[in-house]
Length: 148
View 1: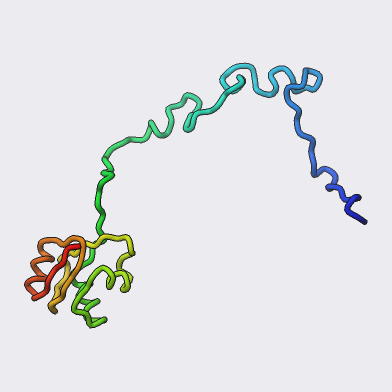
View 2: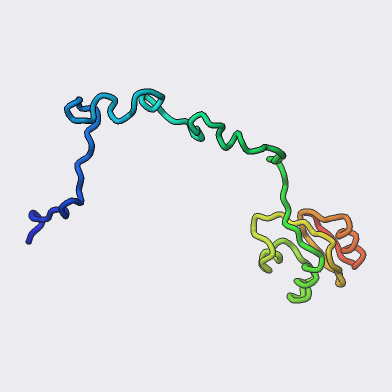
């Protein structure tokens, strides 16, 4: 046996239909396209989402609401979380880098401190935004805030 004697298995390879080569081929005339309609004509291209004249899905579904392209999204961090980080790592200053190391946020996230929980030790906290009650709680505990 050598490479010149290799052949595909019998029945595995079919010859393609040669459409539009005269009536004698059995595939002439309308060339398998049918008699009328857009698909029977040359240059036909179906529009994306076209459902044969039926009302398309994107027009049937209700539309409501508004997505603000300029929305600034913050990752919320509670005071109780900050206190637990400070207790575990024995920190007096907590910034974005400490939160990234602790795994609470990613590198691209903006941080907002919320007033859920209590803070007992005076901490210097750096974040992009603070709620008013969180700000008051940090200052009442003897800490300072730094807005980035």
